[in-house]
Length: 85
Image (cartoon, rainbow, N blue to C red):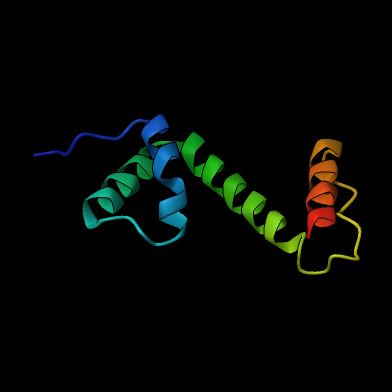
């Protein structure tokens, strides 16, 4: 019997838990099944991972300027967060 696929929206709701390694076995199986058939979500996951990594790296070297390739809105947000810390 095939288990039902989760929707893209449902996957989005648990993506943080996935990256933290906190999915239950049932959630992990559903996540994996969805990723196997949804190229858009695979691309979204890679973009999400990159965004998280950039966000974390923004605080690694607070005196370094953000990469110029970032959109201006993200640079503004990073600089605003840095000024709070």
